[in-house]
Length: 342
Image (cartoon, rainbow, N blue to C red; front, side):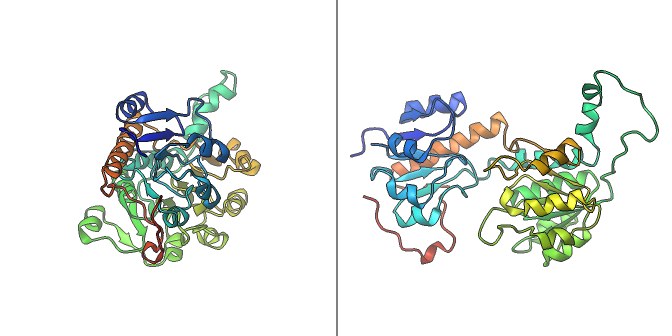
């Protein structure tokens, strides 16, 4: 039976203001160690709990869902992406899943633009000259640290949703021409202020632009969207920015394209990490052919607090018997049978 306050397990530490607010509203158990929990840890921690407040580091697959205590009725993801959760299995088990979209738009777009500037202008490399030289610097010269100008280049955005549009707005201010591929064409009200060109063919756009920036969610259709074949179609000398999901790219093929010199490089806030970072990718980063950041696109205090507030709203709305505002449905959800959660 549900007590006077919802009982929740929070799998990672959240901003102090959010944890304090949760503690006033819910019976809250927080993973103080702030390390990813194992499946057994999750099952044990969820005993007599109503809600799992998960994050992208929690692997919530069909096997784990089948083991969850029956009292658990809601998985309230702290984050926009939910590819760590088997949504179909959760739905079939009668669990509701929510996420925290929208609040990450501006910060993620800022990061994409920062990476777009950093790679062609060699900002990371330039900042390391003195540190790696032990304080020695040969001094300025007309041919030192030459990079690539952004103004006049063509940016190809894959996925013109909230974040893709925000990136386009920033890029236009830097003098880039805006091109995009998306599941559907945006309205004239979106395209015209940006001077944006819609490409119905991703392959054709990849061949035409100087910079490719990924802003599409991970789904069955977008898994390895930039396959080895598509990466080979990219314009010679172009480069790639990814602040979305690593699974959108055939990473070994990308590494090969950069190693060969055909692609200028890549700026990656996300990359494959299950078995550690690809040593070839690390070597390219060491050679300043790739910039890698530690999944920082949404890492602002403002974003994390807003994400926490969205989690709280989802929990309170659900526990009050209403549909939460950020409900996540399975792909083709209408065709999936859902049974009542005990």
